[in-house]
Image (cartoon, rainbow, N blue to C red; front, side, top):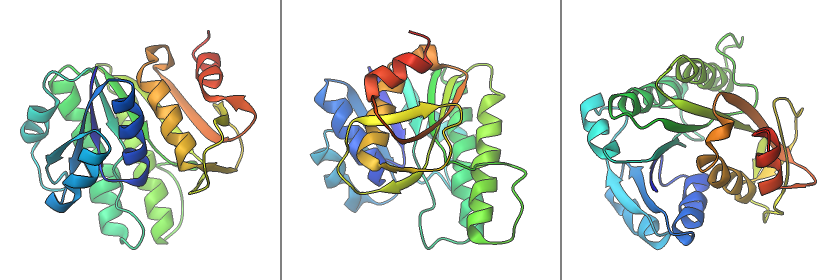
Length: 218
């Protein structure tokens, strides 16, 4: 498979790139800064230099040509204000979805956030983030040309992954190592039977592959 990841230098994305490349997939990661390229190459991914805040849908589509799956893992990140929550967490996700539709890349996986909701109330930066993620998710779910799955992890940690998770439509709040989020994403990309599902993810007691098979109905 050829898999294109938006936000290719993110902490989850780099972990995902290592997992996918280790199992023999062809992986490309979209980055904004050329100096991030070496980190992607070390993870086994091809760096693609493109700014999703200013790129056109045609420019993004050019890099999705021939892909089997697309993963949106970009985010404005900590320290960014409400404006970039909208331009990245919402706007870039919409752009990436539009480019996938244009190039007929059906498999589309989104890294969202627990609590994402387009109707979320509040004036803080995190409130804006949850609204932006919710609006992006809502847009993706309306795209009939996409076989989408939305993953909403709980509080992210840098603890070593355990390989044990709770993956359900509603899990309740909890923490999850980034290692385990990446492991779940790697399984989801290759499990189109999860199409149409919005899933929450926290630490748990079920092995990743079993958890994904369970929500896929296997």
